[in-house]
Length: 163
Image 1 (cartoon, rainbow, N blue to C red):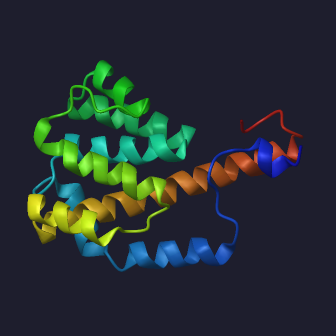
Image 2 (cartoon, rainbow, N blue to C red):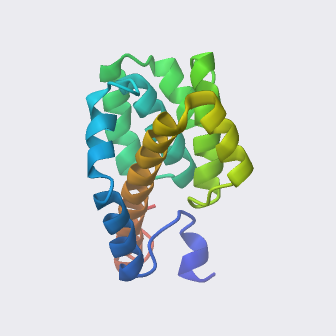
């Protein structure tokens, strides 16, 4: 079986893709500052988004880091475990549409479905939707970088590391 088939997580395949994603995130510096302030999106909501996208992409580094941050922001272990298994048990009802959107977005590798996005804008407004998308882009890049590192470990160890 070819190595690429043995390593199932999403990775970066070209340096240009990393540069493109980093550049796009860099252009959203003001939104990132707002996102991290917790003024528009609470820290716990942001961590739910991060864990939701991470579950789809399977980055063990981001899972570990955002689990710690989620606990600090007030999420319970049960909620974190549910999010980490792809379910939305115990999540606040008002956040579920955004979490479903984040799952859908990550499953489609960041591609936006215009109709779905319009429903999210109706629910949260343009500004909050943009901040949610910035959070999703940031964690997606982190996930792919972590998975790419694991793929390199996997390759140089002949499949013993980075699984």
